[in-house]
Image (cartoon, rainbow, N blue to C red; front, side, top):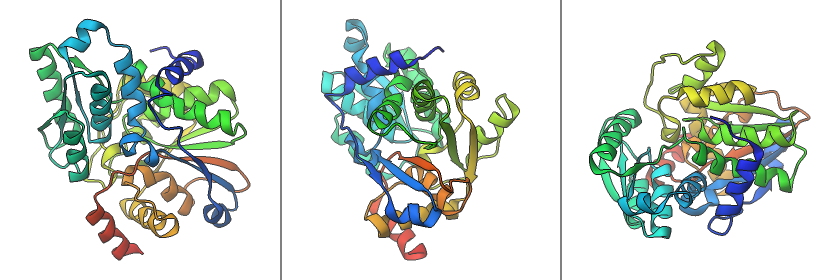
Amino acid sequence: MKINLHDIFLAHQRIKDFTIKTPLMYSDSLSLLSEAEIWLKLENLQKTGSFKIRGALNKVTLLNEDERKNGIITASAGNHAQGVALAAQRFGILAKVVVPQDTPETKKISIKKLGAELIIHGANYDEAELYAYRLSEELGMTYIHAFEDKDVICGQGTIGLESLLENPNFDIILVPAGGGGLISGIAIAAKSINPKIKIIGIQSEASPPWYYSFRAKELVDVTYDKSIADGLHGGIGKENLTLALNYIDDFVLVTEKEIEKAMSWLATEYHYMIEGSGAVGIAAILNKKIDVKNKKVLNVISGGNVDARVLANIIRTHG
């Protein structure tokens, strides 16, 4: 899979009229705590509450007439599903979405509201994905992969392009790492603009395939546990690992408790409802998992689709 800055720029041109240029916000409190200059890219304020609309929309705009006629299908832990559903709605395309059983209710409700057919199948993302692939073949629908697809990656990479066009002098970019589409796209955009920028991915200890595979330089089997960062849960692909080895500097792990505390901190400090996947970078900064002292750091807040009751319980526990 070959992707360059020009590909990401073209994606930006395709989707810019249908997405939000999300705020790049300086965090006074986080900067003071970490003795660094911390900026937050607020993709929780994006349409559907997540960055995922960028990649989904870029992919759907490139479908041919027959592909649009036959409809699209995807598997997702929730956010990608909402992005695909909204993109399909925008172009009047039939969409089916397969989500695992533990997908948060707020994401299920949003998928239905956006007009996609919701199919609940499997105990985790990988099981949902296998079922969606099977349906795709049976029904002749185009499968839109959540993270290992060039057009999707280019769409996600527009976050890096957008951020650096506004503020080009970052030393480090912290990115939540799930399947790898987000961090790969951002890394390609950022390193193409400034090769000195360090790109660091953040994962939960409950789902650590990037951490171990990156160090082994090959796909490694890991143990998965239930995670509050459900959007980062599941395996990774060989193509994205190749991109990571070329563009990404490191991956670090945070604990489930650290993620919950970061969600609580964001809620009390900024009154933002941030899902676990979007809070992992904050968790890494607050717990000094990365040396950011005297550095200018961009932290990507990837999404805000968390059930209100879940967040309320977390705030009561950690607030």
